[in-house]
Length: 138
Image: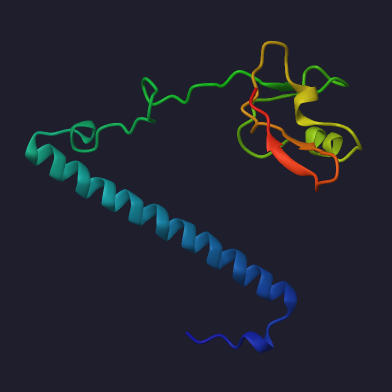
């Protein structure tokens, strides 16, 4: 059953694509059903269940495989409902605010939050010598 695709109109091509997608989904569902039946048969004949063969995967440091939530570390002063834990991609409100002159990440810390920022470097000028950078421990 060869179809001359060049002879079909755009509307006929769309119908063909829709039919092919429907057929593909049906074939996939049939394949999944067949594989499940085979697995269920193997498990039943062995006297096992799926949880025994594949124990539930758990995240590190959590119970029951649930991810633990992290307390927010930064808050948007313009909208206190917008917070960020400091993990993952920076939210747009914070990225935009940090582009402004003189604004630092520490200015968005929530009271009681601690920053793990590297120690600040300070330029110290001495009379008649080049300025050198010293690390100031905090």
